[in-house]
Length: 277
Image (cartoon, rainbow, N blue to C red; front, side):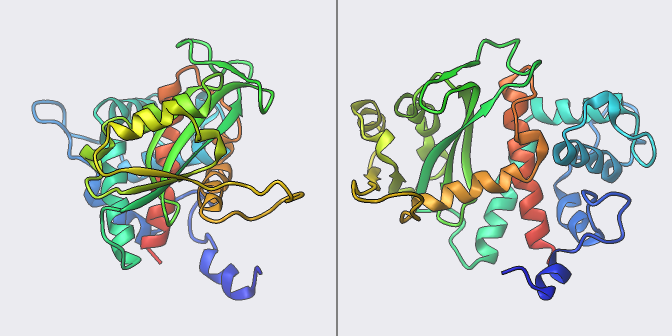
């Protein structure tokens, strides 16, 4: 239930826009922002303002050229920071660090032993999904676009996110998500999934990972309407967290890698807000 205490806890005050980071949130994120590269010009851009601009885009889903000029660096500067951090793996590195900090803050081990896997199909907008051939038709959900395929821990924090065509079935996409997963999460032992993953393709992918097993959480045939199923609801809640950001309500991007980066940014936003409380 939404109470007055909740309103005070989650209130966004003091910033120009509700998506702006507070001082406490910036204190969490600032040490993870890499310094300017050696040999180039000294960095003059206000990095806090630039990242606020990126979070504004994530939250509102406005086009890059509609980015407000008041309070943000030029859109070309913001875009270059976004794209350079993407190419250099900075966003992924920031999320990996924040996820471990957040798990430890929850009194959990930094590396999980159990996870939940599922996917969400996003309908492509008029311009979305055009340049990389990763757009397809999900016949089950009757959606033409892309899929966000996510592996999350038992707290709902994303461990790995892969964006692929909506035409790729979950049983095939699971291999992409689980590929070399042991390199990143050496203690992972168990993955929960729905009946869509009950296939030999998934079993083959799991068999290639030592000491990993998959457990199918089935829905009973006599269940009617919406039913909260054990474990599976965790990843559904994660997708609902992503859905708070209008940039992730549809697939607006020409490239799947851009959509994937915005998913990582949504995860970073969740982490810094929780760690700053």
